[in-house]
Length: 582
Image (cartoon, rainbow, N blue to C red; front, side):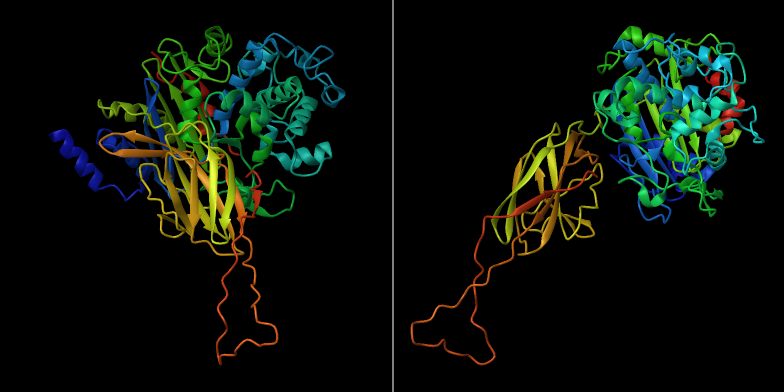
């Protein structure tokens, strides 16, 4: 009783952080832990996901997702994950290893290397570069030390000075990832490959280029189709530089710092939006994820029997084996072998990320749209997940993962100038929410934990705001939408969801990759008045004869087009890599 009273009193003094996601009495203490952390560090928005024994038992959003503080953070909000992109690239490399497409001991550059063309080798001045292996890149032992300055900069990481790289390499802004690699190749190594550990962003950019060379596909496309989709992950994409180009459901990032635009305009811009060149970070720091799909990724490579893995046990052992140069770092993962811990952190201007896995069945992901970036802050971020799982002994039994497979084949058959029938093939949810909007694409979304009533007549179902209305909510695969107007354009979107029974029915929605449709209704034809031969129609002053519109079953359907400062923790890498050592 005393503990309950203390918890309630603590909640009373917290600011009113908005919360989204499925609520549960058992996890109220977890909410309180996150809220206190956000209040202490003035974090605008957070998304936290926790799994227990393979089930997603906690997925909550807190605070605001946008700079105007009008949109809530939700479990479906995408955020930049910065260096948590490195584990993604590591898993991709392990899949290629498992498929026999690469060897960890294979040389990267030179005549026999994976990147053996003149584009790279023509700028190499340090012969030690020809000794770099795939394993050394994965383990940050390839010879680059970003703390050693170059060309008058305190860092040798070209991510930090893209405008200088563009001038030196004589290429237009913004520079691409390949140009960043060529620049550092031209500057040589800081130590002999394989002799020590030094955290390196550029090494993971090189790994991304190896993936492209071996697969013949762009890095993002191959990773999505061969790693993420087999793991059931839909909510992950490479990010964009500018706020105007942000993805649907992506958060906005709070960062007061500014710098010269990476586009070479000479203007001062926020580092979070054009000051840093995110689009050149892809394989080392460019991914966007939801917290819940980061957890899903880890569960797909954790070696636990609770969910199928996408890698074989022997491959997982290789991926998480500590390196000879740093016992707390494996291949894209920080590890503590004694306690079965794998984790990684990430920081960019305006974003913080952490993902962790324990050997006693817990996995969590924490994403923030701010990054105070002090040692104390990082200590508390690393402790936050532990505090969450230790705050309650009673966890829900449901699984909050959204459907992995969307509905497909969304199509329309017109039944008249004021109605249309929509049909689709169901995904693997239990139900579908169909939303229709007149005049523009669907741009409002349901919230996890809330149910919505459908209404076949447009405008009579639940409103999601901004003219978006629910016309169906159920297990069906067809709906006739009525109350439409001739000649108008309508947009439809089908969202899969699962109902979770826990005293009430809690829906969990999938948004990324929903099928969408543009429907143009025909104009109502003008009927001609019929008269007898030799007579004229009677005129009525001030009135026109009523004309009934002709019905039509024809219609047109058009598919919608598919839609850097470094963390202070890295300067204290020895401390970070000994996290929770046992």
